[in-house]
Image (cartoon, rainbow, N blue to C red; front, side, top):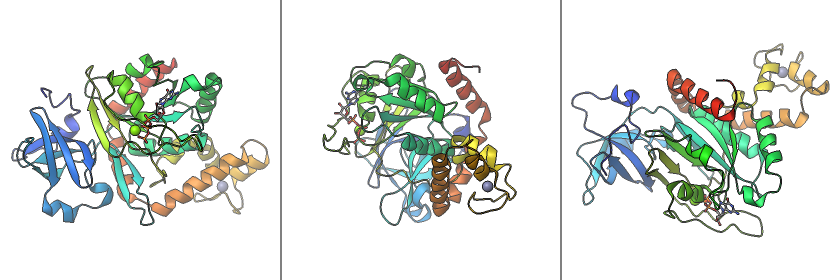
Length: 356
Ligand SMILES: Nc1nc2c(ncn2[C@@H]2O[C@H](COP(=O)(O)OP(=O)(O)OP(=O)(O)O)[C@@H](O)[C@H]2O)c(=O)[nH]1
Ligand SMILES: [Mg+2]
Ligand SMILES: [Zn+2]
């Protein structure tokens, strides 16, 4: 692998964290049950956490696919490198892990864009898209919605319009990964050094899309059960892919549940609710029984759909239940990369045909 660090997504944010005695910067390309595959410009190999880090780091602070780490020595195929440090992330897309402990976990670190992949079959679900977008905004990355399986849907245009209306300012692109249709606008978002994660439910077609963009069937894809239209969790670990044309894709396993782990992403998705909420008498109004609630007044006045408020409250509750301050801090840090983000937004707006 003869790549430069910047091809692998390295940049000033990470460079600033190195000191002369630093070690070997490497990118975590895959993560499987405690083991890692790391990439450097000189080559790749297996890696594991230094014992000290295994004690120090918990949950979402543990390295995941996309993370930049420092190794004590360069990786080699026949030797397990030791991860001595995890560099501060630019962005972090997290989820609460399945199960009752609900431990937060990083799904994709240091990604610039997230493709929220949703099938135009039984998978199509506006609320799920909103949930994913909330997570994307919280992560510090920019979202793009890919409505996949357009070949199966006679009303693709109407679906695109629905998502656009629900999620103002977010590009929505219809594609058929299977037939490699609609991929040109997707490709135009990719470029050298830019990392894009694909997230969405199992069976949405994330791996099929990765294969289509790669131009080869590198990753296994799976049938969707006819009974309920659900996928079978074919992809089992997160994996970074380097595209021949430049750019990095991160394929992820379908998420069983996308519990919100923080509140940061909510406001962007529910812009109108939060704007109304500015008129509530109490700053911490939950829009329930409080007097002087502008949001409830809007519902009563027919200005705001009741289910939209209900959903907003539901998401807020979930978010409050997790209260992942750590992640909130991460996304604020990511938010400091304003220049980068503004360029990204301008690029996406142009793609949508809107004003920069
Ligand atoms: N008709 C149609 N089928 C598609 C399309 N894209 C993917 N599929 C099919 O959908 C099924 C699931 O695709 P995958 O790519 O494995 O889905 P995934 O999102 O990676 O699923 P997990 O790895 O389980 O998270 C496969 O049978 C694909 O062939 C498409 O554009 N049109
Ligand atoms: Mg997959
Ligand atoms: Zn209120």
